Structures are given as structure tokens and as C-alpha cells.
Length: 185
Image (cartoon, rainbow, N blue to C red; front, side):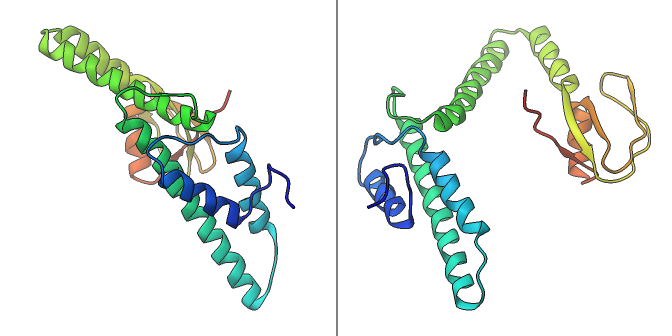
């Protein structure tokens, strides 16, 4: 018999089935996503040849699809709900929902400022957003640029890391000459 923390494709399927058959968010072990990540990671590290390799890849695909279905289902239940009950949500799900709450707050802020004629506030907000900084890794050579904050940046070579204004960063990312780096504290 396996330990309660161990996950295999059968237990993952049972968890997803239980979640999809219920209207409420089901209670889960707090380290579920970490254990699931270990399971999928271990599968990916195993090396097989021939048919065993195809079976392994099918298991990885199935586990990935089930994981996506589970996470989307749990979040959708929460978002659709009038009053969010955080009781059975896991920390990773709360992290995602935190961004949803921030999105709602920003929408209300813009709507309120627009309706209440606070154009100076909107202008300030817009300028602050354009000039907030983003960390990038450059993929190609880039000549010196003038940022949205009117400061000079560069020149840059491939693999250089730099912090530049959001508006400029988005343009470089769109042109595929730089990639955003998610900086962890």
C-alpha cells in the first residue's frame, strides 16, 4: 500500500473525478501540488526505450491533462462563487486568486476614477505603469534605447540582464529580442 502523500495516475484520476463531481471545493492534502510535481518530475527523469518510452510519455501527458483539469475546475468554482471560501483552497491556488482579486480592485479603481472625473489620477496611473520596471534577459543585440522614463538604456548583447521600463520591455518582448525574467526575492 502506498503512503498517503504518494501520488500515482490512479489516485490523481480519483481526486480529479471527486472534484468534478462536486459543486464545492474538496479538501486536499496541503502539499498536493508539490507531491504531484514530484510524481510528474520523476516520470520525466526515467529513461526508457521503445514502447516503454511511449507509455511513459502517455502517462506524463495524462497526468498533465488531469492536473490542468483539476486546477482549472477548482479555480472556476471559486471564481463563480459569490463568497470565496478559502477553507479548502491550497496555497498555490490562493496565490493565483490573489492576482484575480488585484485585477478586480484595479478595474474598480479605473472605473471609479473615470466615472468621477479624476483624469489627473488616471494620467498619473498611466505614467507610473509605463515607467514601472521589468527585468529582461536579452536574446539578441540591441542598440541603446531611450526609455519611457526618458533615461538611456543599453546597448545590450545576448544574455545581458537589465531592468528597463515596462513599456519598452513589452516592445522588446514582442519583437522577440528579450524575454521577461521573473525575479524571486
